[in-house]
Length: 178
Image (cartoon, rainbow, N blue to C red; front, side, top):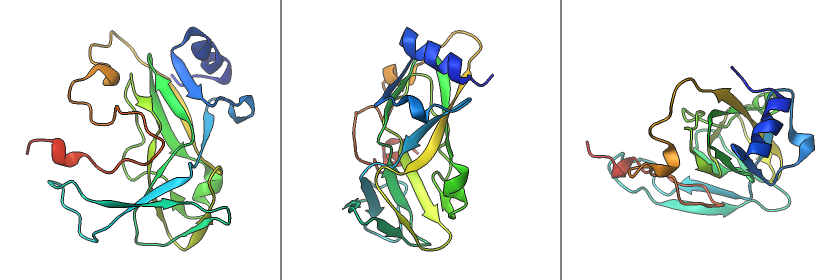
């Protein structure tokens, strides 16, 4: 079941969901709008290695915006820091963003119960498009879970994305043993 606006507010009141900053005007019927932070990152090498800690180059989005180019993966970050202690958060793109040809995630739209951080976005575009820090970029949708939770993300020893940040985080795949 997807939480409604009233239920999201109840869960915020209970402390089960945290959104910082929380702005009531960003609460939709059954979602919460999140915004693009001021930092982007691009990988320095064109060929990425799943077993390596691939270096990234940081980009600060200027006031006049930044033009995304096709065939480049940009790591972005949400302005909003979130915590979700009893629900499964899903991050989806806004239709207005999709209509500009922007995808905000390649595969990682689902968070885990216990995820506490900003969201790193895996941004790509179909044609050049100018983006701005603070623009609406996506929406969080919260799903109820059924059953007890044994392994919340923020308490897992092998969780790779628990350090609070305002910058995008590169893939940590290299920390896996394979």
